[in-house]
Image (tube, rainbow, N blue to C red):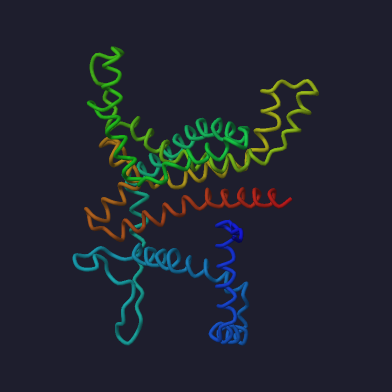
Length: 334
């Protein structure tokens, strides 16, 4: 009886994919389409690069142009609830730009307070995420290779659950008859429930919990590439471990700190779900103002102007994030 040979599953999958690719490249359809693309001057590299550009065009640039167009319109009762930006009259194209939507944002204290409050909440949340995320990322980067993947899995694990479900879970933990208050009362630490729901405390808890992985992962990616011999050399020269950390590890990790901070700060500015579910009625966030303007007041031009202004405010953090991402990529290739 002959002995059966064992082929690993990964090798069988790789062999099957290679056969499928070989069949596709040898097919007449593939050769015909390739010859047409070459005649048009389209190479394989340009075709691959075109995919993300087309994606950005369809799902970012076109929606942005539409919102920008609406921001210069006037509000009206009807469908859609805004006037057209241009129209034909007397055999001529007349352009009607309404800049009052932007001027009104500078005059109304509601929008100014909402912007400032959103920036404050995002900044404080970013600081807390950094204070919690840096030690966790440092510990994972210095852990043994046997535990590193498991610890990273625990960081990514919450993403497997719906974002909305996780926020609702905090409602069950923070409400007056929730798990935290019941546990504290059972232990005799408190005599009556602590009001945590519908407060700024609950809002910060939700934002920090939701965005903490966005801080940890860039920091881990940076800290994991550090050369530990630099710390050993610093200790040999008489530096304490804490001083070596301040002079070597912390400066080298600044690109990761900036990248993680931007990944937390940028989406936290426009956060809507967490302040709406966990925050109080006085929690003024620009995301909530946008919702009210769009769906309650039906003021689409004003809401579009707020969205455009919010994007302009976030352009600088996005540029800073891209700069440090480029530094991280350049350092990885050296």
